[in-house]
Length: 179
Image (cartoon, rainbow, N blue to C red):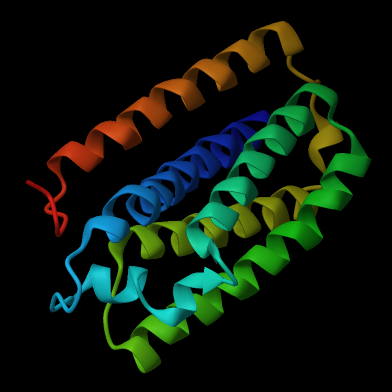
């Protein structure tokens, strides 16, 4: 069961990258878009009224969700705790249902697709699939836990590198208001 859990962590990291890119766009790009600019495609989604929960971008909530998934995935891998396994499932189900709603909004209400939002939706779907697979196979505790001193530094370093990559992508994306 270690390979599916490692895959879970890697997919959560991909969701993290998508969410952190979107969060950065909300914080650094949207404020400099000229008033009345004609937005289309992904920017139409990112600036829609459905992209926020109050003043907080949904992408930021997604980033917190994925950081939680990365952390809990590493805990799951190093402890094989049934408690972690039981806590993960309802959290991921909520994330999956939310993603379904966001995909619906993109396709049928907003009429535009945000590729990063779709990566996040795919990641959440995959996370739920992995959890259900592990549960179907009898649970993570059926294989030995991995050493925490190997897992945590690797997870932290990979997350740091992916965060730097996410920030770099902002320099190459064709964002409005960019000089």
